[in-house]
Length: 464
Image (tube, rainbow, N blue to C red; front, side, top):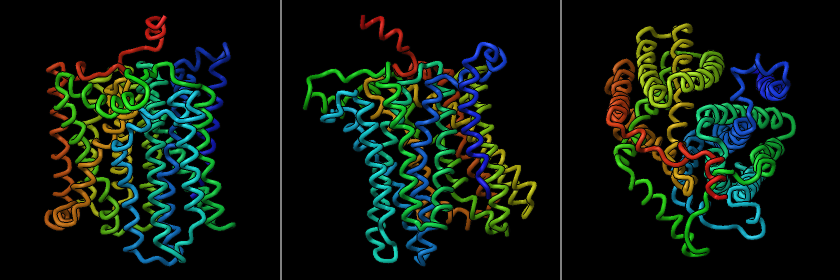
């Protein structure tokens, strides 16, 4: 499938940003003004760099291994490389509290953005140079190193994004990051496939290493975030210890912190169960690869992009709490649409509707829920706290889905697809009701950290 529209999308974003600076276009482009501010455009660039390492060890590596004649069991085992992303809270404190030599003078966030970017480029180049046919063990190590470097890059990117955006920009900035993530992963995957067909996989992967540059250049251009707060404590061991224990003490010192953590853990279980098994449904319903590519990948992609834009609009109109609650309801109901597809069987229109609705709902949630999660961070511990939040948000669903004995596959065999997708809808409801209850009890407002309340201007005045 041609990817020309990806480049067109990026060009359109840049063009709108330039036009919005001209007086004659300002009023006409006012509705999209928040999307072309320098901070939100920076969030887009950060998202591009965040998405590409995931693509390198995802479908792209799967294709490379399959074309190298590697057996299916070995190929699917490479998905374990993604688990590295769930363990990133274990070393997020390093990004938070360790000052890098030589380049540390650029600032804690900028120096780590550059260092992690170099790590990702080196890891991707290393993966480019290994030969799966010659050593599958070396390929495994190389894939895990890409995951490790990519997860570290994500820690810094998330912290930089949250601390660069003002509280009023967090929703739109989250949406722009999602746009960038999708664009970066699609462009990197497409470039690797196109180049590898002509010049080989080594060259294809090596060229993709350049996708780390948008985030690195953003850091150099914008500099250290205005809202970044250094950790209080003595330089050296005291500062490092504060970066390890401080994020936990601060978060759990808030009223209702335990319930907030429970919500983070359970809110996405139904969605994860449903989406990690949807390709099994398509296969058993007899859909061809071409049909999946068009209705799932094609229509689903555009539905997701539209959902992101609608999510930003709803956030601005309804506010954070009501827009998050609405997105949770939509994501729960979207699972039921696959139960309907299972009843209808092989039906392209039903597949387009179910996949389009699911991606549309996920796009809205990708803006509203991530904006809420971003607000939970304390500006002294942004990297560590958001790494913990983002890892916790997906780990339960992945564990339940992948359980070989009583996981999603076992449920489908016992229940059938119709009842399974109804079950995933019901599993999503506790998260909806918990968030609603926390709204009524005032715990949502009380859970917000300084990332959701402190403007950079306020800090500057206080400092002066």
